[in-house]
Length: 304
View 1 (tube, helix red, strand yellow):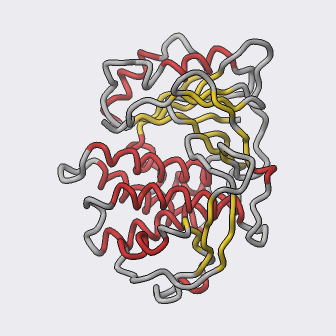
View 2: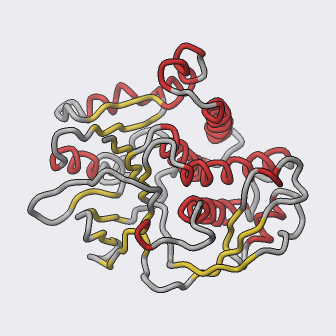
View 3: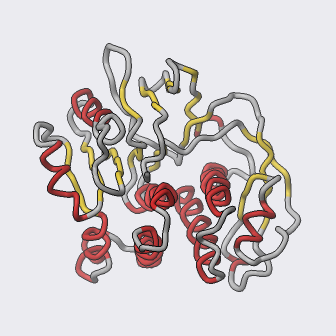
């Protein structure tokens, strides 16, 4: 089973923000777990030195991986679905946009969100923010995921989500549902120049978080989440709305809605609680996932 961390940019001065937790995890996971630390090609050598003492950590360059994944030989050996080509092209566009001069560095956090969904579909396993690592003593193990999963800060339903189709977007009618926070669905659609969101069914769910995701490879839930994120991103790109005063908030609603779409895919609009890890508050600026013995420490954006 594989665990993925990602850092987009040069190593920060405070190494608690990028490598401290991955190192802790590398020292606690058992045999059979492989940790991948993804970074920009220019930082591969530096991060390889940082993890030299951990044989179960492999540092990979994002750009080199995407370039290789686009070749026919790589695809023939690893992937067998038409959707893989689409996903590689979409994520390549998003990463290139995140690294252009005109894109604020803070927006790389949204690139990482898209990359996480890409890894969940095409690779599988666990995707963890750099601030997520083990806590507590005793035996530690990460179970093999059997469904697309995310953390939740509540057990009660506290969010209203809207499920609809982008009926006015050419070709989307047959592509499946879109789910967005009910109050902000119009904001996301406006950023696409779609106009007001279509009428749809309101659903309620617990407070979802996206700093940890898990999925078996090629799960339909992971695909639903990735497809929604990339389609909205593409529409925003075509309408020159990727960078604006309101775009950061739109991206936050988009990743939450995309994850919700993945969690509920194939369940008739109901979110199965078996697809959630319920959290509890820990020390200041932390949240714990007791069942996995993992802890999320909130730092400033990894993109800054």
